Image (cartoon, rainbow, N blue to C red; front, side):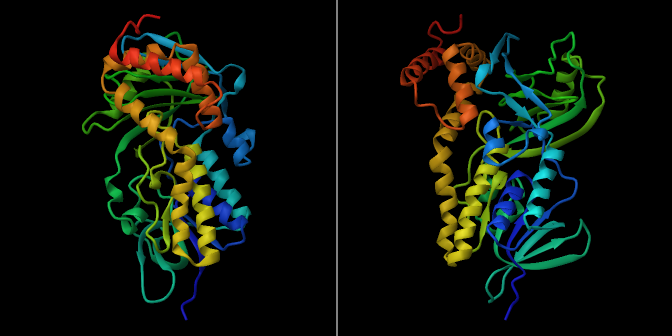
Length: 398
């Protein structure tokens, strides 16, 4: 008989992998959490208050609470969007935040190992054998599991090994620099505000950002255009914001998927979560909350599979996640397709953000992570305003 070392092997220790490992360990399963050393995803670090409540994350992990966002148009017109009394945009540092999540999973019983995923091997025995190296060029190790969860990011090696066409998911490439920043600069940086900059010179098809993290800030940009200089764009943004001489703490770059995979499991014993499943919100690029809530759906499906032995249980993860968040993803995808297509449309999009109805529904949707249904007339007003802005029907002047 072949020994099963673990019920579940989770590859990747970001928010998705750590959440899935914690949930499965809490449910009484034996779990191995395999993570690469020293890898931090480029990320603005924004999280809604709901994340702290849903996942029992302490407020002490927040390094800042942004109370407003500033949208910057191609013409340099700015629109302030104050959060108001309904909440705040929490900011986390991913190196500290991710490690806390991994440590919690270990406290709940998951075994942590550092290694680089190589492949999944199979024989006639039940389960899958995960092959990994302690480090690049290091010794190979093998561990058998009843289910494998790939939470190893966009262009996931686990997905590439087990899910056909997973490598074809559309991605934006992101790069950011974390810097030690002042409270403000004469050029317009404000350490209490998130800036989102919709200018084709900084990003031809996405946006640039300046997100405060207390004593540090994340200065970043995303684009799907090959050959576009992300580093050059960040350098230019830092110069314009009066941040060029600030110390750079670290820098990271990675692809970020903007559409969920059509299938998350292989129909047997492998399932993906987080960026590997493509659960990053289009238009906004928000990923932490969706990675963690998606991983919770994946862990629940994996738990049912481990209890019943029925591979069909794995398929429920994507269905339940899309039932809860699919409409938001669809609307954000349409928004990105229309409004990010040119600087002319970006100008109208930023103008539309000045509308009080747009701001109210935007922040309520962000805080609650669902479309707000309580004010149908507001939705109708926004629909017609949206059409007006899109077609330029007297909509730009406000």
